[in-house]
Every structure is written in C-alpha cells, then in structure tokens.
Image (cartoon, rainbow over all chains, first blue to last red):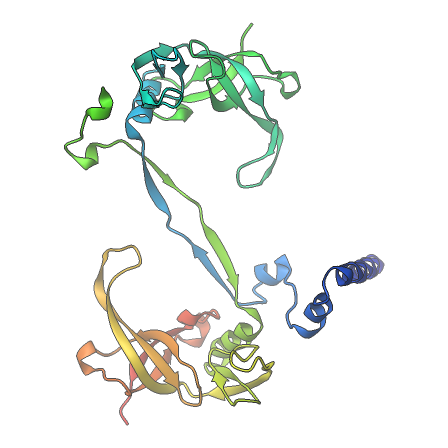
Length: 197
Length: 159
C-alpha cells in the first residue's frame, strides 16, 4: 500500500515536470493535455480484456528472386564452397558475387572458388535478438574478409566458439559448415565462423 | 556469359522464400469501447450525436468531423436500417477465388447519419435492392467478444 502511494506521487510529479518543460517548447502542449480525451492503457488492461481489441496476424509470404549471381553463390554454399567472381580489368575478386563490376562497369569475367577462411573486418556484440528480446550470451555478427578475395571483400556472418571478450579485428576465422545432408543452399549452411591460429 | 542466358520457364528461377512476421493489436479507443461493449453486452448499436449540427455518428466518434465539436452524447440507434449500396465479392484477400461469394452492404441504421459496412446474409444478390430494409443478426451472447464480427451479418426483413 505504502509502496504504491510513493509510486503514484513520484509519477505525478514526473508528469508535472514534463508538462512544464513541454510548455516552453510548444504553446499547444497544454491544450493537448487538457482538452483532448483519452487515457494510456497498461499491459494489464489489454491482457485481462478490460478493453476491446482486435488481434491480427498478417500473412506476409514472399519469394525473392535470387538472380544469377546469388543463385550460383547459394548453390556453391550447398556444396560447401564459397564462390566469388573476378574482373580482369581491375583485377578484383569479389564476394558476394555480382554480374557487373561496379568499378569498371562491365560484365564480370569469371567465377573463382575462395577459401572458407577469413579475417574479421569488424564485429559487434549483440545482446538483443532481431525481435528485441534480451539475451545473456551475445550474438556476434561480423564482417569477414574472405581469403582468396580482394582486400575488403567480405560477407556478414556470425562468430562462434569464441569468448566475446576475446574477439578482435584482424582475427583469423574458419567457417563451420552444416553437414552435407543438412545444407540447403542458404547462407545459414555456414553455422558460424570460429577462430583459428 | 551467364548474363545472356535466358530461362525458358519462370518457375525455374531460383527464389528465396520467406515470411515476415507481422502482428498487430488494435485497441478500439474511447468511443469504440462504448460501441463494442454495447454490442457485446446488450446487442445494440450506440452512436454519438453532435449538439451543434445534429449529425449522429455510427460507429461513434469523439469529435464531429464537420464542426469539430466534442461528442459525448451517446444515443442508441436501431439495429435495423436501409441498405444504401451493396456489392458481391468473389475474390478473397489473398487473391484467390472464394468458395462462395460474399455480399457486402453499406447500411444506414435508423437514427444514424452515417453508414456502416457489413456482410449481408440469408439472401442472394438478385433479391437485393437499394433502400431495402435490413436488420442485424448477432452471435449468441455467450460467443460475443466485443468485435465487429459479433454481428454475423445483416439480413433483409419484410416491411
């Protein structure tokens, strides 16, 4: 009882302060808080069905055309290979593959097989999932420069089997693949990249 | 080079299949709350009346769209009204043909200035005409959940 009183007091004080602050920003703010109707809803109001709601789950399927270059790249992953393309004019070996060299503005000259090792170009320790759930063990997304490709050419992937505190830029890593049976021609055919000496 | 190759069949093109999780929870608001509670608990329609221009909004609104007056006078309107317009729908939201066509009508409830859109049932398109009398058919009270689907459909009534 006592606790809730304190809570209410502090929150009402907080609100007053905010209004004072906003008043100086916008002459319409006091009008917003006094004239317009409506109250904020709590989680409980919705969960316990105190208010009427309409719940909707969208059916949002899509098919994304892989195109020639990415199609072949994903097919390569299925066979446990990382494929890139090369341009003879600028001499670059590029990954992920593309059909045009964006430097020379010409069609690429051929395909090359690259190594499944690389170097960490940059990384991040991520304590929230894509749908904003907190996790204790961070995911470590990283840009990995693939060995065999030109400098700066890399892909975004995950690091694993590594202490998050010990990841550094320039760390040598190797791909950990799914078993041949499980591979389906997706970037997730590589589970993660682990450090090597 | 591969760039000049052509696929004979579009279905041969490689595609990546996915699904985007989209979910929403819509809260009906101040006037919506009163409207749907009345449908759920009493099986009747509420509207708001503007004191200034006498417009009666069904479903209720909290401000008058015409004169910006605050609306707080809730009045009951009839569960029957006249059919202002209708259409017969053959294609579903997903673009596929529906197993049976759905008739959708624009209904002006007695006492209201505005119309609501709902399904029409127990009838065929051939039988319908504009200006026809229609009445709401509610779900049984224990199955209502405070949504527009608490009304099953509107059906024509004899005058």
